[in-house]
Image 1 (cartoon, rainbow, N blue to C red):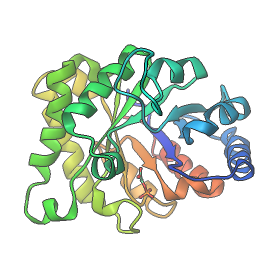
Image 2 (cartoon, rainbow, N blue to C red):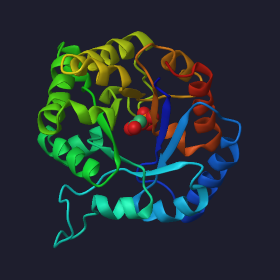
Image 3 (tube, rainbow, N blue to C red):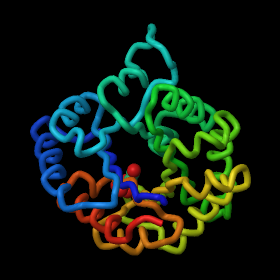
Length: 255
Ligand code: PGA
């Protein structure tokens, strides 16, 4: 049984007052939700504060981690063991903004997945193609390569301990959502790619959709057979919208 999972990616947003209000707002609406796993990923500097307000009702995660597994002279980096000690459950790895703005390659992303798992965190492994890649018919080649890097580095078994988020780059923050059919096709491709190595692991793998998920499109997206919830950016910054999206996942249920 795959329980849907909805995670808010707050990106680099929020004053202390805004983060407090958002955390309180989400927490207040959680009580009525059953059958959906919910988490939020604030900026590093807000994690402890949010955890103090929402834990353990709500899972807290980070948006990135260092590739170096152990303490050392890595100015500006944050290690997986530090996140774990803070109480993080999740860490987003390989978000398209990290890949495109900060030069993260699939090989580096795969290494970060390994480090996150070793630290006891659940990686949310992001994959997805750009508009140019989609229009040139390269979606499966791009997503396949991103997945294979992790499969080859970490093995298929770890896919029972991570979450994959399919986020078409052209749909992130643009208001342009993949149609439920477009998203489902790639989700089925992802599950198939993992199934080629281990059918049982693929069956249990949770694959979130991300990219302009809103309260009014969430039910249709989450109803697709291979979509197990969402990774939510913009809409996760409004408690009511985020809760409505969590409610949509709860309504659709697991499979
Ligand atoms: P969006 O972002 O919901 O604002 O499109 C999703 C993401 O980047 O995770």
